[in-house]
Image 1 (cartoon, rainbow, N blue to C red):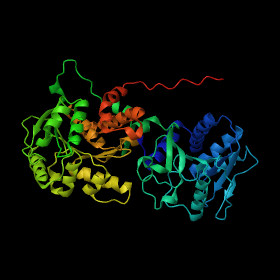
Image 2 (tube, rainbow, N blue to C red):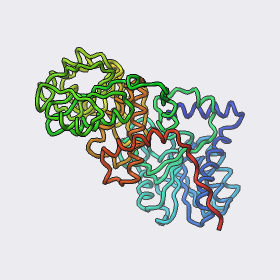
Image 3 (tube, one colour):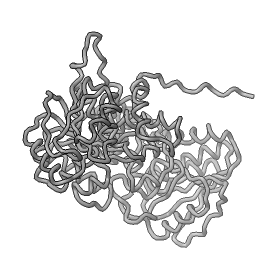
Image 4 (cartoon, rainbow, N blue to C red):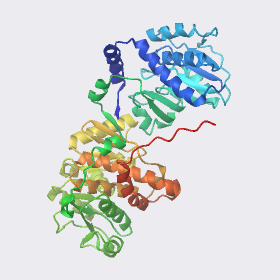
Length: 513
């Protein structure tokens, strides 16, 4: 799913009204009715006080549409106008006039000297104060209103985006935005729903289709794309009946050190489980028996050193390299990596200590083959590109790094983000149970295994991240968050692949009593 920038949202609105021959107020009516329907389907006329706070722009106009339809359907509605400016949008004024036709209780206007509305914890708040167009912090008195609304503990539903959040930059202060329990976003979700600094402003979100022009949505090029099942299944490469193991690549997995052989074992197993035809693990001598006993499907080559890797001289013809898992950063290991990079031409997946060694020896980054993949978590990323002030700066700096070196960067996190060629692919699978030792090693193995099967580097990264997260989602249904371990992710990879082809069947309708 494409994530539209606010400029692209405005353009989509404009083209929709033009091509469908409707007024902008008609599009606003359509959006407001969608939210009303969502609420009405769930409340079914229940008499819970609903407090709708409307700004004086188009987001406020959406709120007035919602209020009007709730009123005409018999709900107990209190409508407020947050009068933060003398300017009003045209469509706000249209709907301000319309609401007067359905109730004698006109909206309550809140100004700088407002009286705090009485709202009980069991009431519902609908936040329609600011939309995506906000470009500066709200006035102090509006922030006081926000704090009051939060203090009520009432369920808060935001229209399109929690008021105060920007779509394209960080907040000046954490208190400058509404914290919503649920956000109903028009047509596409917003990037800020998936960033570490801003995800907490909406506990849950859902997209409502308001009929934006399909041709525009199909053709528009976006910087950000949300990756779900539909985006991944089209990348899947079916296997030929007469294929053999040589058709699916030979992955060389390099890593391990004394006491850290688990990491390279997990990565090697994940590479095989992801479909690599052959896997050879290049490890220090201390891990030989461990690998041979725990992973009989893999071949093993050993470094001259007992406890760490000091040179990388493999006798095999490999197609892809996964490197860094449990490898350590000893000076001899750094030298081995540099020499290997000077000689190697195969694409690479570089994780953990391989990334750390690049961070400390940045001249080696130029030696990494183009279109290779780096898979840092945030701590490793800071060492690689330096500190950032907020998530938007982080993404910009990673984009610059990716373009400079022609490398793919997979930023591991709750919503892992893959960055390449000015594009950002935001993953939707995964869960907190995956915050466990070895989870990243499994991811590196999965991506390496996919690359060995002739998936392009970017497809291997996107698909690998999705399947890895989906494996976690399938596993956690059996283990719970606390008991999930990295081996569970590997065990569920097969089911993760199969889930790509399962039909999403909606639950049967509830029988009327």
